[in-house]
Length: 285
Image: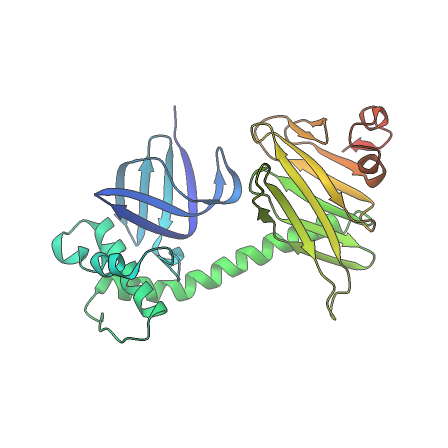
């Protein structure tokens, strides 16, 4: 079976006891979804490094990691003592993975400490920093284009939220069109004692006085969600299924690739009103 190819941004490499790992944002992960954070990949099988691009291969996936898209703030969860150890990896081996990790550790020390250390002899670090200037600008441009695209779609519906769902557990960007205001909100994860939830909260500002509250519980095996908070100014939720399987939204099935509209009245009637199933309160596009 052909392996999926995933493009990574804001990525970083880890190593502990000789075991390597990769984290970062994937453009389209086959099991996790679009523009999703990958905290840990499966074990490394092979890698290559050509033209400032690391190709990192695991059992099922090939991750493409351009140096220009390496994170500018690496190893914030690594203790200083171990970061100091990592800076010496490049002195012991010509393995490019160790050279990248060593350079990122030095970058982390430069960013997080006030003590000056001279890393000017590390050619990998110099190259990464040079490329990151362009890479971060490109990442911001990609984010803005995606936000604009979602906002344009939401603008076609009145008093709505619009979500292209590919990652139930982590959430996807939400675009809104409430009154005359249009924008995009990133999801936030609330870790509960018994049930996690995805929150989309927006507070009024001087430039955009619109506020909204839209929340759901991830259910099942990442194939279902139930809303439990839906502010009154949201009259309809427009949901597109971009997973690879049928999605259950408030107990109603959205086929793969389809878009359905759910009204706030359906939500208030307890999520599973028979009218929701027969199309009175939900329409397929």
